[in-house]
Image: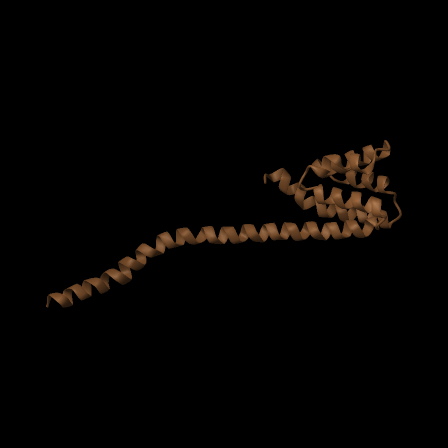
Length: 151
């Protein structure tokens, strides 16, 4: 992932928390989308503002979230919100759970990257220390045995 994509991934949980807070405060979903969409810049703000605009025009929830359904950063959010729309589940609860899930995914990705970095760091150390070990530890022992065998 590039820098802009990373920033978007990190902003999604905060945006979902803000949406949940707006809804808990009594805002309609459309009002919450507009408020949070203007609060964020870049991809997050553009996505939420786009959904808010389509919702204000009376588009079905599937159409409003259609752009997000194709984006891996927004697809889980779009699916959950569409499902909540039809099931009548509390959007606030759904958004809070989604924010937690997104944070866990970000943490797991960061931990995997850290583990890969640790593994990649071992190879240069091995390349440096193995010859030194051979020269300092093995060569003198072999030379000593060779000298003993000559006598």
